Image (cartoon, rainbow, N blue to C red; front, side, top):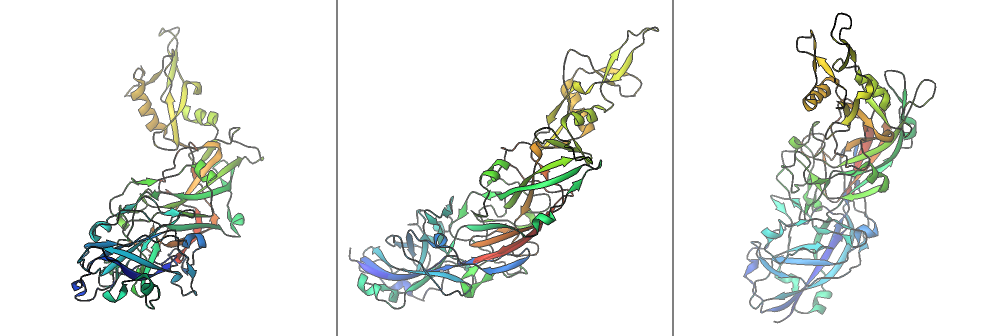
Length: 530
């Protein structure tokens, strides 16, 4: 094989949002090469982050050196119908030079790429870049487009980046190349003055949580129906509801009917995406959730996650499980009007009917249920039967499956228990404890457990749209800045600190106030009042 060189100058932009499927020149596949290696000079342009809604669109934010670092670059070349033509020889660690801030591109890197071409191979007309990534890419474009990644990279190995995607009379990803971009020697490619510019974007979304300076003054003490005071102590926050896979190449649809600006073809970027479970994940399947203890151990101001987008019909007040959220955790202390603790020694308490109970207090309350009795007497005129409500010690508090609540269960023992008959004129012996306890649980309901006083709030991350598609979700190469402004309501109780917390929608208690911004990384700002 002969060797030809293509000087591809790739513009490596730490947080760009789109790489274009530029129009290929008419007839550009008519040129055949005589085999060997071709060289092309590329410039990699990194876009900075993107912005999101909530309180404001924060514009762009340049990435750090770690977020921009290029450890390796691989290139796949195609003809004008997407047939795979050649791989570029892998380029190793490449210096990224920061650019003058322009609200779009944050860094540039250049490289000369060698292509091995078969005898009489057609000249490539399109190229796609994969930075810090190792998928099998010597496939036709239609197959490369479907490739999914289970990693976004990290600061040690480099964040995964790929050619950016935007909409311009159709989805644009691959960058156009022409015969004039290819050279027969590396030296010729190196000195080329007009390298091919490729825009790339990180697969990661970035989330930062800030505390407003006034937050400590805006954590409101609560009172239960007895005047007991609940004071919330903030412990930390972390991401939850994390996607486990993401397309290497960003997927778009024609969202021209949306009322918000989701595309910027001039900057080779877009601000919404279709992930692998965009329309088919109503119950959080495929997402990873975290526990209270996970938040305590990994409490970070900045975290990274995979893209997680969803159609509006997958997210509503009944479905917090489909979206990525910030989990805010802390503990409550509860004192009576005399300042004395009313919880268990370890801080555990229960909420039932708007009042705080200890375990003993809750059992005493629930035991007064009118369903369980003991019997004395011998059914004679001198010693008639007498029925008395069962003592609280007859019961056990048991967990309501799949929840953070407990309910009452009658414990089977040597004692015989009775319950009123159907017409309420007498009593019958309880023999089927399984059936009876189901009836008992329905009668008394559930009490929310706060193990050690631990509680959480769930804050779904908002994107750029005020409602509908694009309102909830996290998008690659966007930086979401969420500021906690206030906490003024009752959080959900934590039953077991080591169990993953699967968010449930608030009934009447969404109380975290926060502001969210998205950056360039395109920044989204969100304020939250809890």
